[in-house]
Image 1 (cartoon, helix red, strand yellow):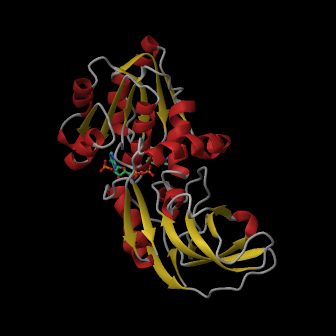
Image 2 (cartoon, rainbow, N blue to C red):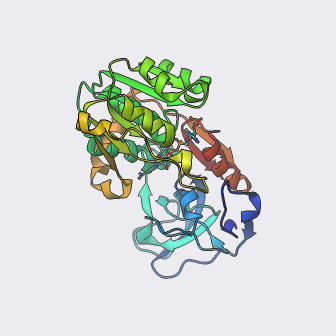
Length: 330
Ligand code: NDP
């Protein structure tokens, strides 16, 4: 089977020569292990962080070795009790066609309950990120006015819709193309949306939220964060989920220049990691799963085919090629 190795650590934007697609032997599962043929691979912005040597919440990918990431596949050989050939599992051995792992690292998923790729997106890690970040970190409550950046992406599109379904007074989103912006208002039920490439974020946000915002869900950082702080109402909360605008920077980006506004507003900025919130998973799957089934919450996926395009799919997420969750289908 083929697998993607990290050869050298990218500086700035990752380049093809930092990576190699390598042919690897497919091992037989040992005792307590299963062999999985991957069907869907996840590519996510946080993987950029793992390509760097800097210490972070997830260890750096090792040079000369296969990278990791979320994946869903079918068990094709099993030497583990309770896992049978033909079962489908969610696990963390992506960036490869075949994976052998301890059965305890594979979570069974039901292909009849939802499309398999949904376990990587709308009902998976990115969905829980939206749910936990909005409801817990940002302490969303009915009547809040909510602004989310990266709003046409996997996390952002769900943040906006969960806010709407839970009674937000106004939902505002920003995204990087006019087409994405249309999707937000026409399909996802946002009250207002703008293309951050069309003009200063602060001005566009003020026009979209003339009464200010109570919650900002930050996927982007940079200019967006400063603009959101500028529009924050009294008691406003900022949940820092991601800062994709700086992931490829080689110099630290300047911080928001208006933090003094937090005094007047008694505002709060707080970062969070989805990994700390898996206690919400059952509630999330129940609540959001029901909205997905009823059609009240809509989602899109951008699907790229073939292990050979795994790297391009990842780079595409950083560029904004995706609408909704970026998925690699094998
Ligand atoms: P998305 O599906 O949102 O894809 C990333 C999007 O970011 C792109 O589609 C692009 O859309 C946008 N983007 C890229 N560069 C910029 C830029 N310079 N300024 C503004 N937008 C940009 O990815 P995810 O939903 O998976 O992740 C969203 C964010 O959440 C990321 O920052 C990620 O790191 C973070 N995250 C954090 C987690 C946590 O535990 N804290 C867990 C999961 C994700 P566009 O066309 O609109 O520019």
